[in-house]
Image 1: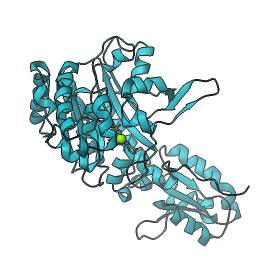
Image 2: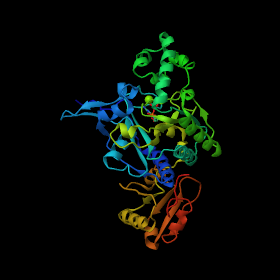
Image 3: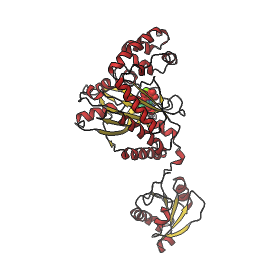
Image 4: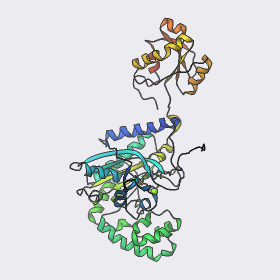
Length: 427
Ligand code: ATP
Ligand code: MG
């Protein structure tokens, strides 16, 4: 009965040495969101299964194959959330948030039982936004401007933007007929799933990742040719806005997204640096969803970013975790005083990240730990320092001898290079 228990395949621990990187991304993204007036919403990780069936769609990969669904002890059919939009809309309806436009963001784990591989996990994390109550192409443009600012804030380049319009329901219905006719003539070349979806949900075929099916799709009619005047105008205005903002984009007429609720604008940001899992951000308009979930008709647009995929693009070495300073205490008297001195230093220097050595040991072994902690400075407390109210200051990440600094002068000495005083530490 003593075998080791391990984490579930495709679900990962985020260890302390990686968490600085996560926090770096989350902080930067949150700053941008706040600069655009977004407010955070937190919803439960578990919802009734019906919510996802009705929003994402019964005939989608997520609902057919990927959800973690179960019956709870009371007999309710529940699922771990596979994405965030459905929950946000459910909550907005439930709490009466729809009488004025809402700019909402969320973050957290999502769950899909996919085949684990690089960039594809069973528990993964998204940061997403939902705008409820705005209908024009201006807000579509603003959400894309917002994403561009994320990439700037995170120092990411080389992402490309693909956009498309899925039109409105009547246009999609006309297109569905033309697409079905076309796919039917190539039935034999389609994968099994796609053959089934030919009758249940032919648009989903465009989202297939099967190479044979993809070859057929290349010759399929384009939805964009079926748009009416109004939806075409919406799309053209978005394109004009992107041009004016200097954002490069590619109109990809095959871009349909894997969830049924989208209409009109859809977009993805894609990198070539992550192989097949190259989409780091995806979204679009979903004007019918609120009504479909029982709310009053409300236009909406949103997107979600895959945090793990974005993190792979960030230079982890540039983000320094760990403390600013490590307090080393030499001798019995100093060891007794160290914790109290550390308290005083934290009070004097809000924002200082100070790790105080505990557990005794020789000067040498304490210094080794100071070095391994990643701290930029060692602070050394010994008998002399105790007697004259000073502290030894030694840089650990660059050459430099230890020097004595009075406690009064310490904040200035540290704030040259550390977070003490409120400056962000990571570059
Ligand atoms: P894909 O085509 O890669 O399966 P998707 O269309 O299923 O993506 P969405 O539901 O639009 O993805 O989710 C938005 C983003 O969340 C994706 O662009 C991706 O960055 C991320 N994402 C989706 N599924 C996973 C997963 N299993 N593991 C890690 N990230 C994921
Ligand atoms: Mg998927």
